[in-house]
Length: 375
Image (cartoon, rainbow, N blue to C red; front, side, top):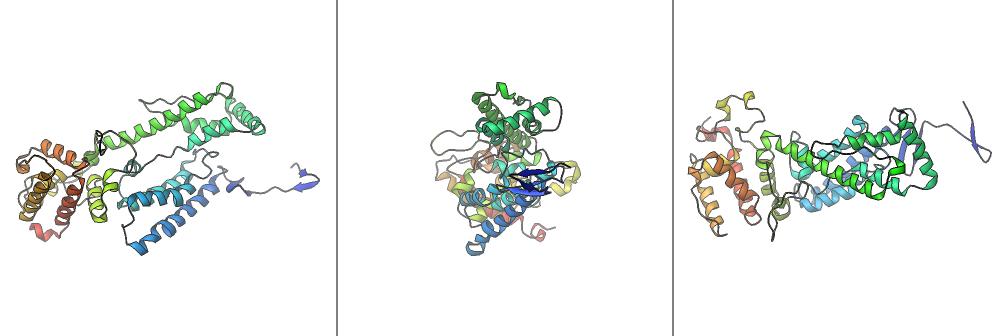
């Protein structure tokens, strides 16, 4: 084995070294594997020891979602993306450690259970992380001596050998979709600021498209299909990732949780399943009227078998009338009409407060012991 020295001082071989906060390990197949483990541990400690420790003082769920997301970005996300500009995510096992922390933290912020769909958390938060974009940006600003190493890495890639350049290209092309094809990483000699900027925009559009397709392809998330984000003074528009208006406008945690669980299939209703063949039809029927599937639109707008539900719904209609909304007879709705009206009321800037209050009250009825429904 060769010996290296610097100014006459021998340089020892080491299995592990930390440089500018990034841990390199020479004995792992992925030299950044130890770095991923360390950052996952630190992020988890900051999340539950810093972010959620505040709940000991203000109460569970009483941190406003906007503030919680800012604290998440400051305390947790900074560790999850640390070193992302030099370590392309080609190791799924290592990446899963960071994703698990992200998902569990966002679930806690949104008040969701451990079996909620992972994709919807990112749809309800303001941004998508694109680590590959960081790597693309530093290529343009890399110093001359480091550029020589990058050129060697590209040569190895062209010779079909393992290299950092090849890992980055693999990550970039993995974002490609049918509607947003992502081009391969351009060669260094043809790389320009404009080509890098276009590649970054394409990657972000591809990630947003992937999230939208996951939502649209989920049967149990049908209330989110074709959703438009309401604005205060302008028409509603489609926005893939943003802090949704119920999280911004409603201050009562129980009301936010009730609607979030309703939208994301975390409710106690029996009539919504990703695959109805797994549940007998009798178990999907409304526990009050026994004549219809127990769905959110049926519970909120159609069922008339329970007097408490009818009373709450009437109060709901009276409050909507104060906003200038036309009166209608929900009990005569077809299933399609009930679904249309429920979506329009939820994704409305002015009626969301009333919808959340009603949803929270009706949710308590469905979560009562089964003896209430005569079962």
